[in-house]
Amino acid sequence: MTLKTRPGVMEIAPYVGGEASVPGIAKPAKLSSNENPLGPSPKAIAAFRDAAVEMHRYPDGGAEKLRDGIARHFGLEKACIVCGNGSDELIALLTRAYAGPGDEVLFSAHGFLMYRLSALGADATPKAAPEKNYATDMEALLALVTPVTRIVFIGNPNNPTGSYMTAAQMRELRARLRSDILMVIDAAYAEFVEDRDYNAGEELVRAGDNVVMLRTFSKIFGLAGLRLGWAFCPPSVADVLNRIRAPFNTSMPAQAAAVAALEDREHVAKSLAHNKKWRDWLAAELRKLGYVVHPSVGNFLLVEFNDADAADRYLKSRGLILRKMGVYGLGHCLRITVGTEAETRALATAMADYANAKAKAAIVR
Ligand SMILES: Cc1ncc(COP(=O)(O)O)c(C=O)c1O
Image (cartoon, rainbow, N blue to C red; front, side, top):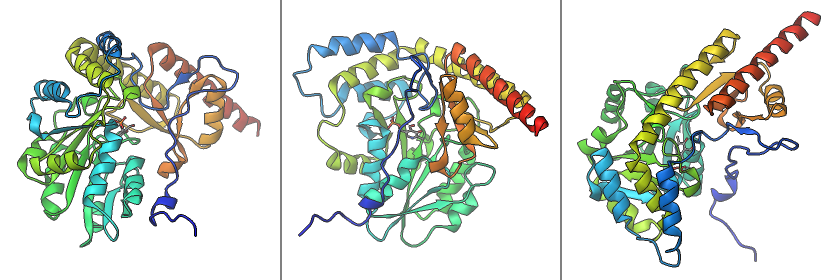
């Protein structure tokens, strides 16, 4: 007799995070995981250190202070906020709660990988809708809805394409989905979006009982290593998540650091300004060199190559780690996280050298 998993489990290829090292290079630039290049707020670091002396205590399982802080900072109802061990955990919990064998979980083809993996983990069937111009195509999504569709995940903005759907498009999508389909708006990069026609999702959550907005402390707040995400949900969904989550799913130092990170508005403003300046600078430099760079409202850029693997090897040799995109069906692209000024300038120089070398090789041939 051998152990038997549930059917979907062995179909899951383990998630591979962004690479962090290059043999022979002491301090490479890690531009592979959309982290905050300015690091965490010094106030968050201090709060984390202060919390260390209490690490023999269990955390507050209800994350009361943190939920107070989130509610105040974002103007939301505390009872509708549920914290998770990264928004990854919340993606998995929502999928497990609302989909199972025979059910379908729908998302856009180049959507965040965890939507697919969570569906498989819940024994549900993942379904990917084709995109148009590297962006979510509402008609293609709606065309794939069947009587057994239970959840639609929308990365908004989407990682790795950097595109977003407007508030009006999101309202239209909700209106055209059956009311018993849960719409999950994954707004991990919401803080970076300055476009006025964008809404992270709170207005749709409030409008009914079938929309959830997911957010994270991993991106602009610079706390990816602490694993902290949160959901803003209708009370009925919050109730469901609170029943199935682990009782102490977020750690005490993480909660303390996140409260301090929320209060440090200066660090968030600095991170936002840095991202806009260097993302736009880098996109312009790369376009001047002839690269196809997709428009992005996030803290990353998706760039096309003739041979992305060769480009990745070359950039690694220069100490620059980007993210390969094969698992997203974008094998001809690399994703670049906006780094520090020095990292961004070094990348632009290396990409120029690469383009020049390719041009020379083409002439010689
Ligand atoms: C679109 C999207 N959603 C969710 C996450 C996961 O975030 P967390 O670190 O909160 O699990 C990421 C991380 O890269 C992401 O890009």
